[in-house]
Length: 237
Image (cartoon, rainbow, N blue to C red; front, side, top):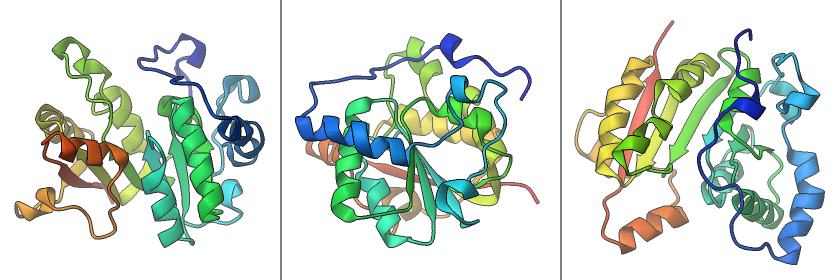
């Protein structure tokens, strides 16, 4: 773990707070988040950045999936309910989204979700090599201005550590409605050690069989933008 950047000095671009939270959402953050939070990610509780053991999050060595930037949590709760034998870690620095997720977890009664309410790069610091079986990047912040493209997730700063923590053969799904984000994804993700699995147009035009539309996708469709669904496989033996 030598050479990691101290989170206090790591640049973060984007909002951490939005509109005021409802009283119920504040209660979720105060009571529920404590039990679901991934331990060992914050610098003050793990200053040596020692790897955490994902099995301790879920009580066994089940497959572990990762969702980067879960937004309001619709997709993650949907997947957790469909796959009770899988553990899902979600990262989201936007605290309003975390509060929304906690409400959905209460309503669904899912017990196989862990949360890091912060930057996924901090989680990458402490996840062991080849510990993630599947990853999702769904409607990430497009950073539309060209000078901000380096802030996108699909850059080496994020993709190299993502590749490190994913098992060989693990699946990485990306959904976006921004054509230039598709371009950059198809350029950068294979360079990081992933193979794009599309064989025909329907493979990126049609959603995955277990897909549930997120609120971001619904907004994109209302505004006439076309979703793209990109599937990659982590290469390696």
